[in-house]
Image 1 (cartoon, rainbow, N blue to C red):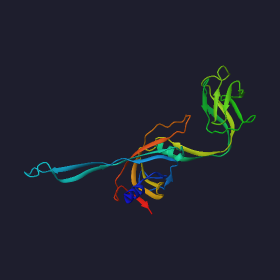
Image 2 (image 1 turned 45 degrees about the vertical axis):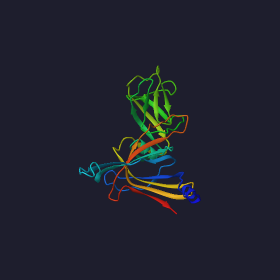
Image 3 (image 1 turned 180 degrees about the vertical axis):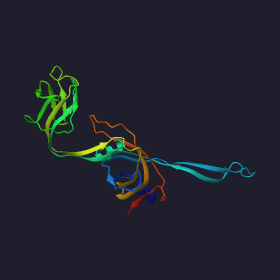
Image 4 (image 1 turned 60 degrees about the vertical axis):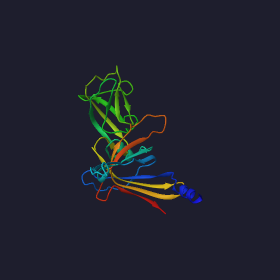
Length: 260
């Protein structure tokens, strides 16, 4: 009994770990480098769905028994949940791609806009400088006609927008020219819906917390699909959920390792 109990305890499993993903190039299927997806709150493989064709006996002594069987299909899915909203995870969630946002400081003269009362109009640049004469709005057809900030318009300096105040002097659809200065900005841009599919190599590096065993799961190729809403207003920590299908390659579908 003691040996059986010992074996059972050694076989118990409580897992934790890191999930990495290498997004494959859509044209060549080449690897582009593994990225850590952050805090993974769930990572599961579903039970395989196996389809097969059976040959049943019609013989007198074994009628109805299966005498030969061939597997015609194999399908296995994965599910994972992330709690980190990073440029990499949002790229997966939006089915998009990332690029760097680099805006050096500078100045613009005579940028033409078409305003509408009670509405915002976007300028080319953001992070506008906020000091006297840093933003000047004039009539496009007569630069001597200058409008007054706080009376005719307001400036959203952070996003780079001009708000036209209702009952001010600016008439709808009458073109304006804007002079302004702006500071540098860096960040990242996630372009939405630029990919019609996401295929990836998946690596999970885990730890069996019961027996302190290291483990590792590799999936050679998987098709990844967003499976939850993207919550941008919440009173609690939000999560991103994904599902996927494990794909078969020339090397099989993957492998699982327990490391001593």
